[in-house]
Image (cartoon, rainbow over all chains, first blue to last red; front, side):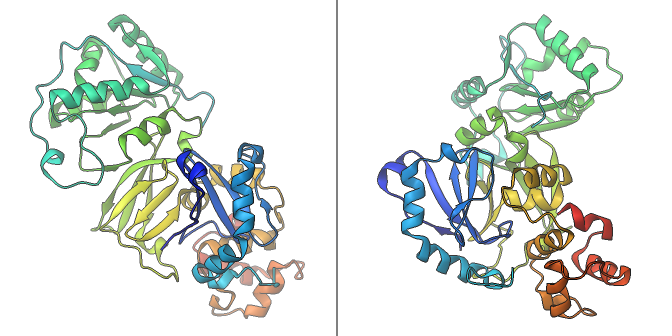
Amino acid sequence: MTYDLPMPKSSKHLGWKVKIRNLERTEDPHVTIIWKTLSWRYNIRNTGFMDREPNPDQVPKDVVAHIEENVEKLRAEWNKKHPENRVESRDR
Amino acid sequence: MSTQELTFVIDLPDRHREVPRPTRSATRKRRGRAIGATSAGLNVSRARARRITGRRITTHKDLKSVFLEERGARRPSVFVSWSAGNLAPLADVIHEERGNLRLLLFEQVTPERNEYLHTLFRTVVSLESDLHFLDPDELTEVISAENRGDLFVGGAVNPSEEVLVLYRGSFDRLSVPFAWFDRKSDVEPDTEDFAVIDHGQTIRLGAFEVAADAILYDFDSDYRRRAKKRHLNLDDSWGGALRRLRELRGVPRSGFPSISAKEVARIERGEVERPRRSTVEAIAKRLGVSPEEIATY
């Protein structure tokens, strides 16, 4: 089952979602921030955006702060879904 | 999406619309809301079509000239029409070939009219068919989006061939074998419960969700090239590409019969300067690509 990070009301109301889906383009462990037709991959091993496009500055700071506040929970959820690409794996 | 790709919304005075008849979708259970099965529904469809961003075509003359121009330009342009009757003015256009045009219709068409439309357009998609589509409001936004070609708008499950056929926002089709979805996960994909969600960014198979990005990365080399370019800290070595492909396919390092997990790890880390040809071939075979393709991941 996909993990949907519960969002603060204001962000949820504007349509922001943060997900870890069952099948992602794996690479580094990450969450996907989804807003309408756009999405951003956010690395939860090193914390930071993974792609230069779409522009990470378009993501509200409170959405990023919410991810960082919940990063341990997100790491645990990632490990459950992707046991062969665990966050703490050093063999990268 | 290519900058050459254009959208045209056909909004003519409708004198040729087919009389609506009860549709299968109006009587069967479906996840999305049914569109356009009644006169009121057609008005809703018309309003939705009008919300799509694109060049508006409001006269028969304009429709003919745009159609001919786009067909000649061989651009993958998308024509959107809330009514099949809107296309009647094209009946007297002499056409030898259909170019690269796609048509999105908001209503159901008869099989005869569908055949005719296929002589004009390479792809004809009716929202009133047995295909599953995005929620209509999201669909409107996706078709108007610049990146629509990288989003999915709908699809159909084909249990006989065990493939999922997906439509992109550009109305290009892509087929994904069921086997591709087989991964170690807390839930199994359920192909009998298919939906496109998150504005075309997620494919849902029961409780199992797949990123559209993961599908496109594996099935579209042009998307892969663009995605790699966007990546901020990409390990662009051959070993890095192998690791991405292996993880995308859900194959553990121990999953190569003739190669040890240690050896795979060394190759991925770049510690093997030039892997043997036979090793590369064995890896490629297990991952279902040609040896040359590995570097593109």
